[in-house]
Image 1: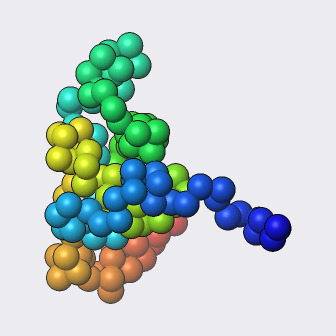
Image 2: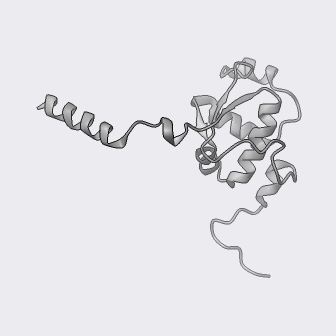
Image 3: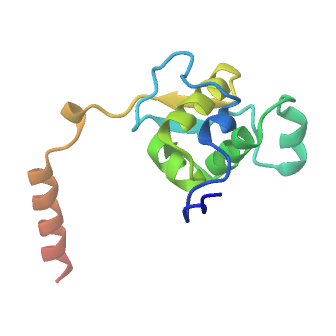
Length: 129
């Protein structure tokens, strides 16, 4: 028997998605932003009654991770210790059920100019002195 490598999970990641290897839509990118919908309350007494039955442990973990606010797909993957591909599948299924919202990342063309941000930060530092 070969020894187990440290840090390697005992269960393959695809089992967290129920054996599904690809998301149904494939519209989620690594920097897509995930957040819970109003259908899922943060109140533990009410949340359990509103969640549909049959959610996997990984889906519950993703919903719990999104309880504090929004996360990108990559952040959720790092937090849950799952590959990005597994989070994309889980998020797609939860989006189909209306439990989370996914919005595309902000296009690079819409991001503020880094030089402008640096000048504003320098100006604020100068005012602070």
